[in-house]
Amino acid sequence: MKQKILIPCVILCSLISGGMWAYLFITFVPQKTDPVVEPVIQEVIERVVEKAPSMQTLEDTIVTKVQDIAPSVVSIIIKKDLVIYRSDPWGFFQEPVGSVKRQVGGGTGFFVRKDGTIITNKHVVSDKDALYTVITNSWVEYDATVIATDPLSDLAIIKIDLEKPAPILELVESTDTIHVGQFAIAIGNALSEFQNSVSLGIVSGKERSIETSGEKISGLLQTDTAINPWNSGGPLVNLDGEVMWINTAIINGSEWIGFAIALTKEKINYMLESINTSGKIKRPFIGISYIPVSPAVQEKLWLGVDYGAYVIDEPGSIIEWSSAQKSGIEPWDIILEINTQTITLKQELWSFIQNSIPGEVLTLKLLKKSGEKKVVKLELGEY
Image (cartoon, rainbow, N blue to C red; front, side, top):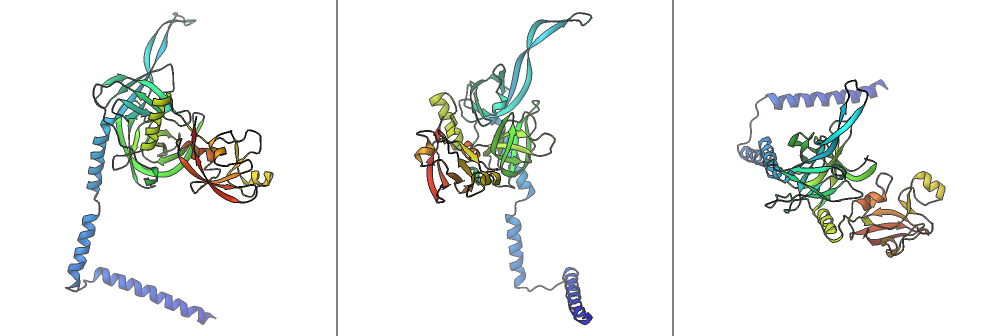
């Protein structure tokens, strides 16, 4: 038995020893190269080195893109009338004697139309009693008007009156072109003190969900690019200078965990068109009442799956003439997928709807009460 174990050990040690000596020989002993092969190897090495991006090239790209982007980014200053009190010499009472306008916060935005239309975060301009001032990259101040806010996502449109066309930023065509690991540049009014501060990082994750200011926002991009307070509303751009997302939040107590809202040309065009036609940003609408399916819900309701969105079997659970009714959705149906993406507790139905736009056609996979699986098309309504 010992002999059987010894023989493989000897063979293994011989292989390891031989490999080590071969490595040392190749590394430290001068090798003769075939005069015919050597020029070919050298040519291949030169081509690889020539095509490989250098750190200097990367740095030049970032510097150029920041210079191109900066004129389109603005700082937003929030001011309010604060009451001034007068105290008696002994501090027994205080009496209001007037008010003064003071800065109480700030944020960032960027031009999306040459007429001075700016997009920012809703939470930056949500105070109806506040006054908002926009400071451009050339340090010119303008009074801003809040045009509309999105009732579900953290987005808002404001406007200033300009004497000449504003420099606008290009937006990506689709968020599908954004990948984890790619570079991301953020520009914003850091701490409401350091205008157009630039930070560089990467895309750390996609399809994140967070709760902020009592609202749950989904479909977010996570980045380790430094997003400081009052960076909110600023652009997060790729190395082509295109806006991928709009910076919106950071996780308190963490390091390098920031989030941004998806923004595409199609989405911003719809928002602006909606404002022009209805005076507000309309939202996508499906028209059902449902319960997110979990293993516990599956067991309680005797469902065939432990994921998806279960359409409640109650009167009014499907709104008459809604997109859901027109597409043939019925009570007891379970919506399993939207556009081939599975609906789970982490990616709920509402998150898919929230990040779509009215008029968009979705492909839904249903599990019917009979056990049949069916694929239907649904065109989102609006409200």
